[in-house]
Amino acid sequence: MNVRLSPQQTPAIRENGTQKERKTQAGMGGFCGKIRSFFGECQVSSDKWIKTEQKNMKTRITVLTLCAMLFAHWFPAQAQQPTKVPRIGLLGSSGSAESARTEAFRQGLRELGYVEGKNIVIVSRDAAGKLDRQRALAVELVRLKIDVLVTTGSGATRAAKEATATIPIVMAQDPDPIGNGFVASLARPGGNITGLSNLGPELSGKRLELLKEVVPRLTRVAVFGTSTFPGNAQILRETELAAEALRVQLQYIDVLDPKDIETAFQAVSKRRADAVLVLAGQVFTSQRTQLSDLAVKSRLPAIYYATEFVEDGGLMTYGANRADLARRAATYVDKILKGAKPADLPVEQPTKFEFIINLKAAKQIGLTIPPNVLARADRVIR
Image (tube, rainbow, N blue to C red; front, side, top):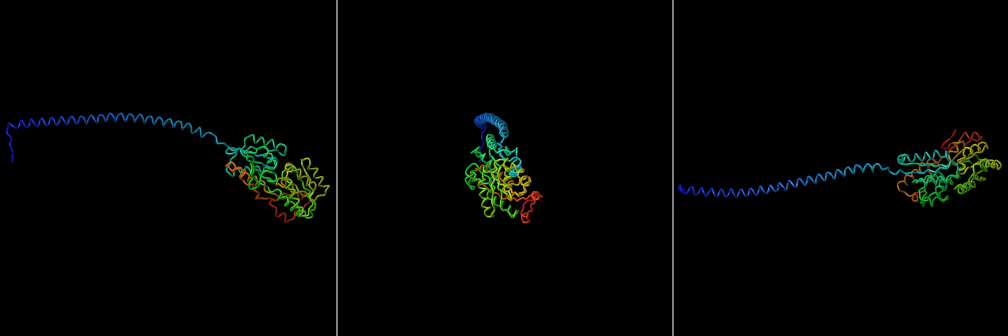
């Protein structure tokens, strides 16, 4: 149904519509104002938050920068601090006679990665045959605050033992570590000393056997020894046992000083000995050339305990390869530097032996070496 408005009703309706629109607009305007106010406040809060965060960020960056600068200064300083380089004391007794063994020891260290002057320092002292100097040299090494003390022989080991009970001592070789009082047992040394044995006593009998093979009619043998040398008594006992088995008479001559050597050979001539057996001793090592010369002059076959004797003119030598023992001593040093205690490191025995014959010396005394003996030699000097 269509409703038609009169002309009089239309303005009234329009007026009413306009008022409603005004109210609506006013309401909308208020609402929008509130919205604008709300977002305006949010904008202000947001600006404040951003500014605060920017300040915080700047603070963080400043702190991190300072930390980085401090770290950069601190780290090189730490990196530049030198690492403690181990100091190894090497105590010798016979000077040039031990040069090959000393070099073998250094070679052993190189094989284990040690470079002298870089990650290890070796401080050497040698009595050069002057036995009364060994104690003072050992004390000197101890005062230098070494980390390990390596000794080349029994005399040096005894001097080291008297000088310190705390610094680890490594014997490069010793004839009788237990008998000399250096260790409690080979398996458990128990103190600050460990290292290697050269089986001196056990091998003395073998040397006598070789003399018997070279001189089949051998009946009397002069034995040169030094009663004050550590291990001499044990070596002599083993030699006497071998002599009984071979039916050979021993004539022991005590040589305490280098000046006694010539007198000893005079005694050999008077006693009409057929050959000479030289036991281990520092007196002999330091005077090996004199010994060899006097043996040749007396036309006496002689056998010695170390390679250096035949290299200096002696007739024969049989024994442990001492250069190899010295090289193996480096292994003990390495283990000790890495934390092992000498008391827990077993004393090891030789694994390499050498029999050397000097044919030049044999010719000088008019001796013919039997072919079967010559064939067993590890080295022949012609």
